[in-house]
Amino acid sequence: MLTFSKIKETTDFLEQEINQGRSIGFVPTMGALHEGHLELMRRAKKENDLLVVSIFVNPIQFNKSEDLEKYPRNLEADKKLLETVGCNVLFSPETEEMYPEEVNEKYDFWQLETVMEGAHRPGHFNGVAIVVKKLFEIVKPQRAYFGEKDFQQLAIIQKLVEMKKMPVEIVPCPIVREADGLAMSSRNARLTPEERTIAPRIFEILQYAKSKKDSICTGPMKQMVINMFEANEDFLLEYFEIADDKNLQAVTSWGKGEGIMGFVALQLGNVRLIDNVRFI
Image (tube, rainbow, N blue to C red; front, top):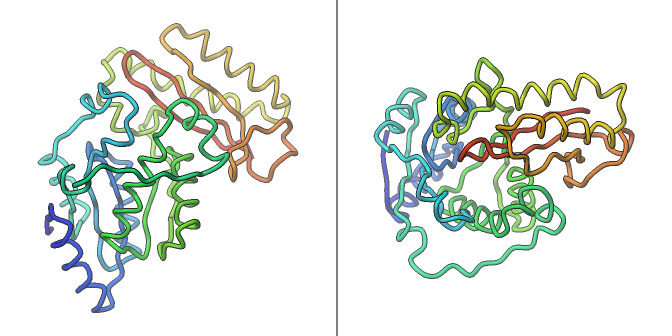
C-alpha cells in the first residue's frame, strides 16, 4: 500500500495509473475505520483496478469544536485494516495541505439541506461538499462508494456531482450492522459499555415500525415512533421523520412516494447517533 500526504504526489501517481487505463474505486473516510468502511472498500476493490482510500478528519463539517476534538483518530490501526482489504493507495493529508487558505465556497442544495441533518447541523453539508469535491478532483475516481447510513449525505453528494457535472459514479452501499442491529459507526467507539447495550434499541424500534407499516398511517406512525424513543430516558431524540428517498421531504401517506424511509437522530450519553429504515 502506497501512502501519500501531499496532493501533488497523489495526483501525479494516480494520473499515471489512469493514463495506463486503470480504473479507480474511491472510498473517502475520516478514519476510525470499522467493518462498515471495509465493506465499501471490498466492493470498490472488486469493481475497480485500484482501491484508493482517503483518511482526513474534515474540520469544516463539524458544527461543534468539541465534536471535532473528540473524533477518534488512530492512523496506525487504520493502516493495518486497510492492508487487510488490499488498499492500493492511502491519501492522508494534514488540514493545512487541504486548506492552505480560508475556505469560502458556498453551495445551495435547496430542500435537500433544509431538513433533518441539515436543519440540526447548519453548514455541515457545505463542509462535506467542499471536501468531497476537492477529493474527487485529487483522486479522479471512476466510482466512489458511500454507505446508506448517512443517507442524506449520500443524496447531497449525488446532487453535488450532478450540479458540477463531475465524471464520477456514486455507488450507494447498504448499511452494515453489528450482530445486535446497531448500525456501524466510528462514533460507536465512544459509547460506554452500558450505552452500547442500550444502542441496539434504535434499530429495534425502527424494525417494529416497519412491521406495522401496513396497519398504521404515516402520521400516527411518526407519533408512535417518537413516543417509543422518548419513552427511553437514555435517548434524547432530535428527530424522527418519514420522508421520500429522493428529495427527503416529509410524506403524508404511504401512497405519496415510490420510496419512503424513516430517519432518526438522537443523543445517547455524549454520542450522537443516526439510523434509517426503508418502509417502501
